[in-house]
Image (cartoon, rainbow, N blue to C red):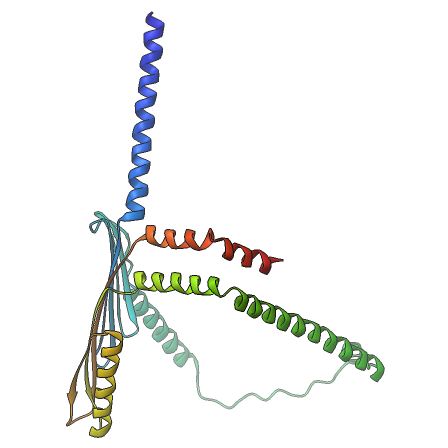
Length: 280
């Protein structure tokens, strides 16, 4: 009885450990699939381009920050309180510029004004003459050159003809299976809807030399805004030539949604048929 109780206790312990591991795995999978990755991008232009991008995941447990001002950029990746990578590219750029200035100063110190040294013509020895003769390409007969040209043209025609035939077969296959093409286009629209930012604001301060052209641009922007639902705010400046921009984009991405779209496309029978035909 004692041995049986010990075995039951060991099995119970192993079962509890397996259930805990299974629960942790399910929790991690659910977090990866159903917790969104949020991004926030801000672009400004006032004489120079300034870009700031933030990506956060799991209530800011994992966060990435990217900043670029002109040609200088910096990245910062953090997980909880730990800094994974955050070496500023600004410092690296400064070091590179300092090294370049140091090398330029050294070269300027080393170089002294003087006359160029003229090298005297060297006499070729008999061995050099023989070497140059050996290196000279052998003369080919015109018949052999014509044969080579014909063979090259034949191979290029075969390749181009094969490519054209494959393109024609793909176009004919898509015409026959228009339902597959419409299915793929629908899935692409769903994917773009999910990835593209959910909220955005585009603020422009625009001034041109020609007031008539500026008025036409304002009318075109109003038409684009009405047709595409883009939030475009333009403040016109009629007195001077100005171009300033301040754009903000926010969105989120679910990995589960992306995997669902990919599996829907992969397990479609018509898509599998087309892939099989293309492989063969």
